[in-house]
Length: 299
Image 1: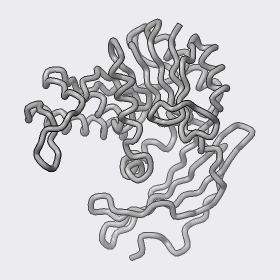
Image 2: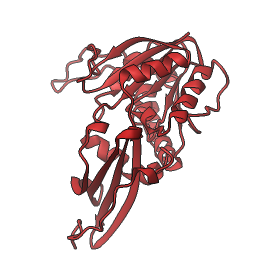
Image 3: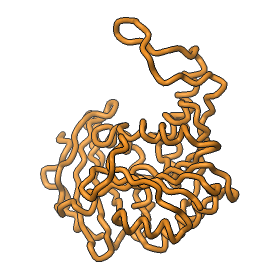
């Protein structure tokens, strides 16, 4: 039996249909880590670990999902709380934390060794007692369920704010972050600049590969709504296990603002933008950069 139908059912792109940016993420949960391992991977994790290690207090990650960023930061000894609206995403994050911290408690902290067996210089490994499992909370980033000034730092990695598809959604989220962030605290935002540049297409095979015992194929359609700065990805995951084939369909919609537009939004919410980077090594930003990272400070 073929993993990809010879005549996939046509899907008519319709960005208006996804009225809420959180829609689709529950269905995406089983495939999120598989897809990101082949696209973004973990190339942003070291950057956020460096940033978060400077926090003088607990760190909040918005849209923590399956824990792709949260877990490495917590393993580095950072006191971290992750919030997400998707229960299936959080279930995977909690299971990942249970596995990671069970392994960490079972082995002594020691310097890592190379292939030759010689100890190599690395970032010091936190003592076992300093490794605190992350806390995962279900909630809406537009109305964060935390006390005022509860966090020293808030992180919004990998375009999570672009899932806020209406202007009032972003305004509410920034106001909520300002409330829970202590004065002088850092708000780090990662925007994905190429989303509005994707050409529109229908039913294109984007990825193929194995995930455990399953063979997965991602078939994708893209539509743009330039007037509202919206990009909608209509996803069909074809999952084949032996002779059994299932299709999983969902949409993901993103809204993209430029760096100057986001800067103005942050300033209106009570932040000062201290730096803008163009990659995960801290190089200066320009509008052709691969990533747009804004580091803002709560007044």
